[in-house]
Amino acid sequence: MPPKSRFTRLDAFTKTVEDARIRTTSGGIVTISSLLIVLYLIWGEWVDYRRIEAHPELVVDKGRGEKMEIHLNISFPRVPCELLTLDVMDVSGEQQTGVMHGVNKVRLASIAAGGHEIDVTSLDLHSEDNKAAHLDPAYCGGCYGAPAPPNAAKAGCCNTCEEVREAYASVSWAFGLGENVEQCEREHYAERLTAQREEGCRIEGGIRVNKVMGNFHIAPGRSFSNGNLHVHDLNNYHNTPVVGGHTFTHRIHQLRFGPQLPEELSRRVGSASSAWTNHHLNPLDDTEQTTDTPGINYMYFVKVVSTSYLPLGWDRHRSSSSSSGRSDELVQLGTYGHNLDGSLETHQYSVTSHKRDLGGGDDADQGHKERIHAAGGIPGVFFSYDISPMKVVNREERTKSFAGFLTGVCAVIGGTLTVAAAVDRGVYEGGLRVKKLHSS
Image 1 (tube, rainbow, N blue to C red):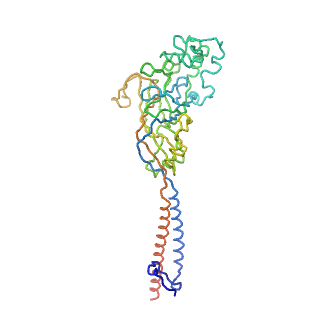
Image 2 (image 1 turned 30 degrees about the horizontal axis):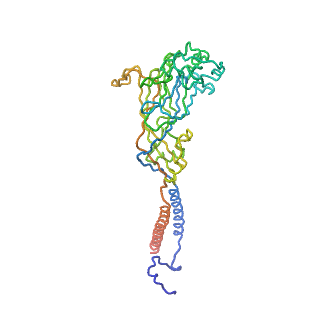
Image 3 (image 1 turned 135 degrees about the horizontal axis):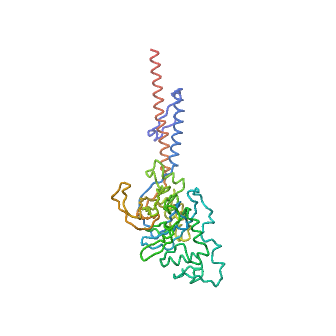
């Protein structure tokens, strides 16, 4: 025998000689079974280590001077595009300056004709053929007592029907169908508007606004300011040959604040195992309101909460260095919120809605006599949004570290082999006792 070293007394793993070992069939079955169980459990540990979850946390929103994009897609089957106006105002009631927008009006066929889309080329009520370019260069159309608009093609003149309408709006005058207005009669404005009376309209696109409390609304007629009041020219809306009149029946196909979440990220943060089961679902999507009354005002009160999604491995210092010096004006509409470091800045919201009959009265027909509506107002769809001072940060993290994975693997191997040894020992001892009973 070799001489014993000083570490021999510390050996916790005593050995047995080969001749003292007994191999059994049951031991082989237990060994194979335990090996399969070990492989299965190790695979589970690996899957658990590779799984990524988004962990939400609530912080105070310290952002200043930020912008926000509003993306909308709303259909109005009983109002033509020519009558609809989209206005955006901030908390002071003034129109926001520097608002970037990319909103399209899509003409829709009447409900009786199926409501399909009409060719986009026919969207413009004033086609290029009716512009003032073919007129005598010395021609200067009158503005009929109103000051010429500052953006007129020829300073001090109103050479088109559109410029006359803008001149009227600047002094808060109702325009109507442009009767006895030379420019509108030349462009057949009244005939074209009458031809579109049965049509509907879909407003789709996005606008970039200041991230402050405000509202945007879709209402009939050209808008203008009258003192401290925001007013719309409703003459063409109410005076219509359409039976039953125009109404603000509408369907909100989509309304979101900020960029849409990628499908993979939506599944991750909205999984059934997450505490945020309905995370970032746009509550107004596919909302429909119907009415047969022209004078109805729909109001949606929206509470907007800033939301960040930080990818796995996101670094705060790398993010601040990559986003520094990046001007909002240089970011293309629709891409705002997608940062260079892979993080995403968007918003989620909650909403309550209310509708009011502009003729006044109560809701006795709905069982609520206590609801008294004031008379007057502007028909349309109004969205009033408020910005929450809190911010939700969703940070992607692995459910287990690599050290935790190795610890789990060791625990699986050690625990499985220990249990397998106990099972094998029990089977072996049980077999011996059975043999003794049969031999006695």
